[in-house]
Length: 83
Image (cartoon, rainbow, N blue to C red; front, side, top):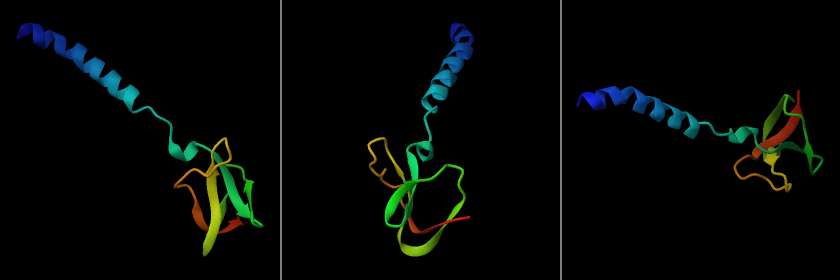
């Protein structure tokens, strides 16, 4: 039992390091190129661009991968309006 108590801090350190590595993954929002649907075309826009997507049933902005395919779940509906 005493050996186990002496080993406990080392096990806690290993567990903490393992969890830190497991939780260190890239944010999905930062992946892909941000594009806006302007004049019936997808055009790249800078990440720091401020915009509003008006309430309409069309595409506003979405993220695209390196093959220029839309990343599922990133499309926002509306009309793109830069601020």
